[in-house]
Length: 402
Ligand code: MN
Ligand code: MN
Image (cartoon, rainbow, N blue to C red):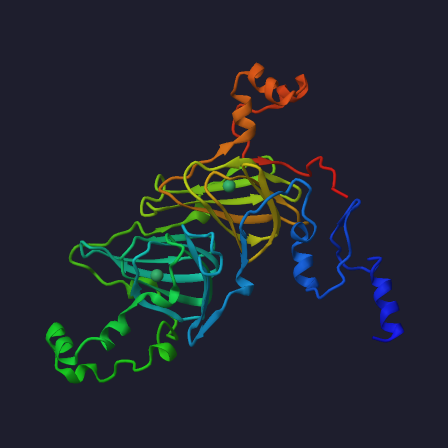
């Protein structure tokens, strides 16, 4: 190594360039070795973790930007499952895009499928075990839920669409669903002829290569829904979609929340969710959930979350397109750390949504008992809430750690 190279390296030891450095007060030191600055900038709470973080907590973040995207003639899909984020055993997510007319092939799977439309519109179809059929058009902010085993399809309308699918098993894979074309290809032709009561020649046009032509295939843009509906002798079934965009949100200081579970969307009997919108500087209160792990999807903005479990804590930063996770009963908060609104989904493998607020718990407990634990003064005791706060408006009076 030349003298010049050594002196350049010596300059960077000071850390006075414009790069993020893992230094807080008299702790830490500059990075001298290899580094990936864009990833470090996205994760300041990992690079320079708060002094309140402690111990070993598994990774609770995985971005769709780091997931394999499978491309098909009609669109694409990428998944974040227990294989990408091993702690996420309860739920798995798929981010899927369908071009105008693009079709997610007729299929079914052993997991229930809950979905949130991110952009554009789609037509969805299904049948139930009573022989009733379902068809609906869904737009931005709408949901659907197909219980385990129910066969269904999704097709992009004029503008195409993109959506998030959530399955009630962390080991789900989009590549392992029961495709209608796959079954035909794995059934003897004479059995197909017998089953459908037509000659074997009727099956000459079956697709030969599912990987290339099916799964997400291209298609013609569908016309009005009335023209696509089939009249079923047993009638229609209507409950597989839910127009969350039309649900009146619970407005609170700092933002708003829409909760959807089996109480207002009975088809979603294994998956409950909240769509949370937080103003800049606002915060989802310190809380936890008595139901199950929380699977998160960040739709818009930037967030910071710390999770707490006995003697341990870990803090993560999230951006739009990231998946976050909170193990069962871990305490946590989610702060909007961006300049604009934060929107994210909290999803649970549960028939109902439930949470417990730290603030409300203390507010509803004998004051002497609370004071004995935390030595709060009168003003702090008086500030404790008896109702459920959900969100704390911003900007919070918080001192940045230096
Ligand atoms: Mn499906
Ligand atoms: Mn939560």
